[in-house]
Image (cartoon, rainbow, N blue to C red; front, side):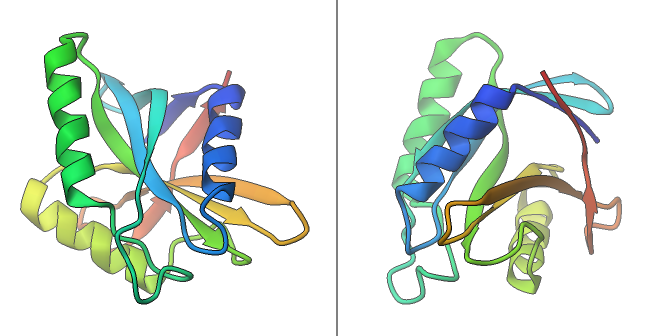
Length: 150
């Protein structure tokens, strides 16, 4: 998968994730499918992490907030939709975990949609890194997306 995204949008996502520290932050990547291999991410929306017991190393997108976002996107009529999700790994690495794979594979089983996943490592010293992933055709492992930052 090829991902088109602006550097400024990547910076906005990182900034929103920093506000969730020390817990994981999360949200939705919004955009459109350009062609069979390319997704353009045009905006994002941070959503509340509904995980209350292990928020420092787990996230659950608050379902009512997600449903409201889906309604707004449908009402907007501009063709934009949720094309993926983002979350942070505070003081971790910007690579999917086993838990991330289980969640993404489970979502694929329900939706049959190959979403884009952005994972940001946000470190205590202020450094950050964000990577983009999608599931392989068997939906049993992540593969790195080809990111084109504009």
